[in-house]
Length: 430
Image (cartoon, rainbow, N blue to C red; front, side):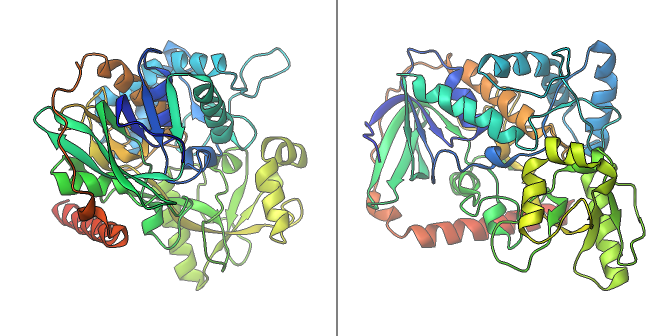
């Protein structure tokens, strides 16, 4: 662990797209500490394959808005959806400024692909590693900033609450077990989703809803903890561990789903929850533990150029997608609920912000439209950074009782229990 001081202007828990974007949008005079529970490049932002949406001119606004609302079962916050869509071209321009290389045609113009739930192609991509392309450039830029300190293998156990609101966080050096306070004028929770709480998930296993556990303990408002998205197509495997996602873009480029008899059984370009339901129904009908994804209609050139990582992984697992369909099964993928925030990422506690999969701003409703996650994370992180400028310096520095956090395993287990209980309670209300 690098040297961590006791006092910063901003504390950011998480080094995914949200945490990094917030840091990069803060004034260079602000002293910023970014911490991450694992290596800095092991966030789900790095795993995003498909791409990132962008509004394709004013004529596309109504269609993009309707696609997002329909996918979310019209439970979306309309103001949040409008903010995300309107800001998307400027955010893409910002990413290009950091060196992000989106696919382009022979004339140098952006190439767009389409995914399920979209009425037209509006998704920018970099092969099938768009998340890695974006987040690695953000991380590289953050590492150059003298005002930013990045500490890996350091986790947040709690926030420090005082009369000013959130006064920072209780941190733990995972290697040594040392527990200590860090005080900050503003704090951003960007610890990712809840995939580590599920047996089958596309998420990294260390992402266990840590910010949600803190919010529930501290009485910070949360919302829709029962809104968990299942991705329809992950590569079927009997091995334990994280499930390998096969991007929705593959179906957007022509791949089809087949039953045990090799017959197509659904519309592959419907929203994720619909396709997931169709797959599960077909599995039950066939008495199988997976269905088949036939990528041959995509064509060899597109498979090799647009989806090199997916192509290689399928072959590693013994399936040549140019010759045979590959087995796929739904798995937990994304979390639409989270710590409730407003249009600027503010939580119900002063000086505490949240962004990314940790937060719930209402933009996704009950079901996320494909490739809106990176865009949403970046925009709310940027908004949070701007809002933080309005807070003055802390006036109080409440002490912590480090001994009360000594049993971290028990703390995490209790948090997981509370998250599940709250999700079940909300599901009952719905």
